[in-house]
Image (cartoon, rainbow, N blue to C red):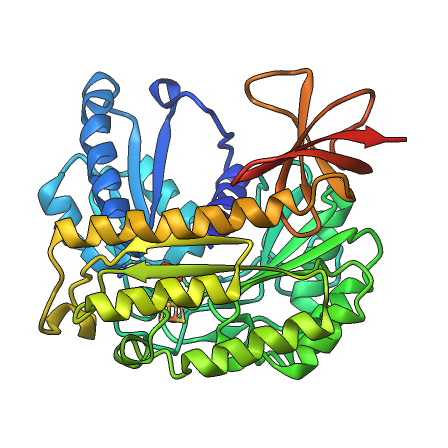
Length: 431
Ligand code: SAH
Ligand code: SF4
């Protein structure tokens, strides 16, 4: 979501004459778009803000801004702590970035706006698309891109800061989404990922399954993905839409967060382990080649060794293709921050390691089962370390490396898998 927002802000700044640079030393404007979902993300931002202080000293005309979730949460505290920041822009004000930068160019004074947390991305008049509500993101990459379909969240999982810093859930209109997808396709993107904190509660005038099916019909969308699905809302209609889709990839990211009912309840996830397992069974029956990935949090307050062992058993039972595992991070202002029985760091780290060990073995086992199969791969381009090797993604969203002939980024090729590791596959192109 932050990547998508950054691209939108970059698009707005381009309109007032800024271009992107990889070189912070030469920048006229540095905008840090922040995340505060875990403390580590915030710590990184504070480190960056500190590092940019010397740049500001060398180049007093440099403008330094902080946007996004941490800006929303911390507001003027950021400027109190680091007065070399010029502006702080909350999540509901991202679309104002160009106006704010312009005013700072004209007059140097601190600017803070964290109002309107549930505000929409305000929009420009359409450039010939006929839409009254488009903005023009400066998209990174060249093959795959994000299109937000909704903002905010209403779920209030007890550990999570997102509803507080991103505001209540609001959905974009289907026409606006279709226009943006067409625009991305016209720019050459082949793969679209529809984004929302909980796409299954999309309420822009059609169901999410209908929206997905409609985007699937747009010419030039060669692959279609979506993120994220809350297990409580994943409908039969969506499963049918994926199973019967044209270019909808057979991959569902379905964060479970934990594998014991007691902790799920304390997290306010409103499903049980049994319900989740039944959902997985239903999905796998309808979409046999589906790849399932998940998010898990260890060290949630009140987690006992018994809860943790249940989670390991749960992982062994589901056999996810991959899991993103996080140590619980206390976010002040969320209910779980005040829960008793916070877990000590040593236990959290030990449990994370054990969890990863179990899941890594499963991921490897799943990948090894793919060896010798031929899969469709969307070519992304040369690998960062070896330009004879190309990287791409399977429909199941697995990273694959292969020796390239004259394939081009954005091309769909068939690759025979020759080797499997925990996080990646290797193979050869089949002509
Ligand atoms: N809306 C998405 C998740 C957005 S946050 C969903 O519900 O699936 C991405 C992931 O960060 C979450 O799935 C969760 O696993 C993790 N996360 C959120 N808050 C956290 C916290 N306080 N500590 C550790 N991990 C957290
Ligand atoms: Fe956070 Fe839960 Fe909303 Fe996801 S569904 S963003 S975890 S509150």
